[in-house]
Image (cartoon, rainbow, N blue to C red; front, top):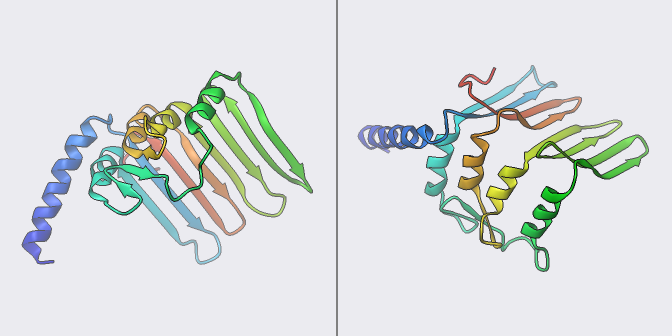
Length: 184
């Protein structure tokens, strides 16, 4: 790509991202992947939610179009995700599933508007997933055959905490939302 076209594309991206960012209250998506085995390699991503919202419609693949992820690649026939979500939303806060096996534990629960998934392996990974039910509701949208990623991003603008953490002997991963642009 020549320099002029690159500069115009970059300017358009910045302007478009700035417009979208204003609608998402200056929230940022952060991803940190720390490798503990190879000289402490670090991957750090800090992206404004508005920029992600602006970029999603630009991705047009077989599965992802206009900020919507098509579910036809997954075998969900006979599974109504909307009804499952509504049942979880109406249920009281509680542990729904708890499995213990040889020191490993998996727990799925609901607490204060969050769907929590915790996996603790005795000799392996510890995974924590925190999904705000409002975000899941927005993600499911109105069409049972797709996930609305843009609506989920807009719902994430009201969230300010960890989404996913993974800790293992060799790698740590953290994905979170906050108002800081530096991810610290």
